[in-house]
Structures are given as C-alpha cells and as structure tokens.
Image (cartoon, rainbow, N blue to C red; front, side):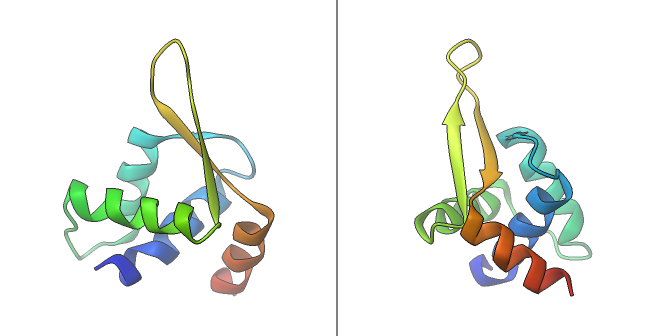
Length: 85
C-alpha cells in the first residue's frame, strides 16, 4: 500500500503549490486521490513517513497547535512533476 500511496502524497502536496499542508488535510487529500481504494489512516501515515525518509517532503511542527505541516522539497517537486505528466 505504501508504494501506491507515496505518489498520491506528492501529487496532493504539488497541488498545494508550495503552501504548507496540515497533516490532517494531507491525509484526507491522499485518501481522496486513492479512490476507489480505501487506505487506512495508518497506511497514509506510513506513506507520508516514507516520503519524508526518501527526502521528498519536509514537515514542520506548529508550536501552537502541535500539528505538522508538510511541503515538498526540491527533490519532491521534481518527482511530483514527473508523476503528474
């Protein structure tokens, strides 16, 4: 499931056009892009972690809400553009 969802993570963040994406919103966007499949929240979280480990995305924790917001790295932008073609 991870390899199926990783491109969805990149595409969702690419659509945000550089605007940080809160983790909860990113998870919902990935689930929408994965339709008709029904990934669990754990599946999505695993794919997000894998994208971070691969250097495609970067997360920053908001000190007020304690929620992580995600953006694409340069490597992630390049890969997302390849996938979107």
